[in-house]
Amino acid sequence: MNIKKTWGEINDPADQDLSALLQTTTLSKFSSHSPLEKIKKNLLINMIWTLLICLIYVAIIFYFQIWQVQICIGLVLLISLWALYSAYQQYKHINSGIPEGNTVLDELKRHYQSITDWIYIQQRVALLVYPLSAAGGFMLGGVLGSGKPVEVFMHKPDMLAAMLISILILIPLCWFLAKWMSNHSFCKHLKTLKNNIDALEEEK
Image 1 (cartoon, helix red, strand yellow):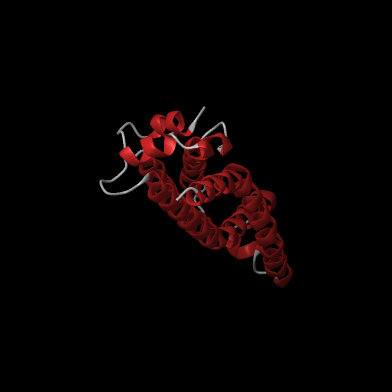
Image 2 (tube, one colour):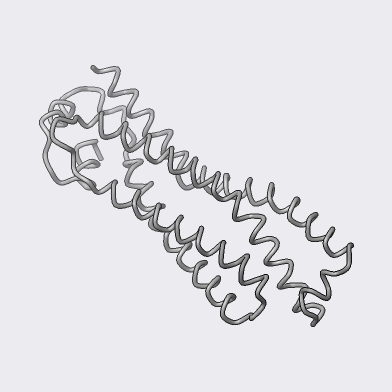
């Protein structure tokens, strides 16, 4: 698959700059599969999983009438819905055509920067999710395990310490897991996209 076919699968409008690029010998250097196409596919998978997780959060909020847990999971749900919306925006923008006056190189750079920024923001916002979800999960587990209200079993100092330790342990674990998943789903394809951009710039 050459770059003409690759870009054509994402954007239908023809572009004179693209046609000129297609005649260069550099095209043989490009990956046989579009990194943008793979990123788009993984964005869709990301949105599906996020939606399923949001449904689980909704079920927890309505099934377990524990206000402390509802607050924690409710905040996590709101952040997750924002993440779902931002992923959809990225997914939709990959489908956009080439604006008049722009070249394929301009568009590849725009997509590269936009997706890189999106990943960075997602990772930073996720740092708010980890302690909230860990605290909510700990309190829910405590209620189910002890059969006592949160106010009762959390009254003991050792339980509060246990929750804080759990949060401190889970935050870095979740961070590295999320970073590994991000690298697997997006970053490796971004590297390929960057290589394609560099190859096009060499031909300028």
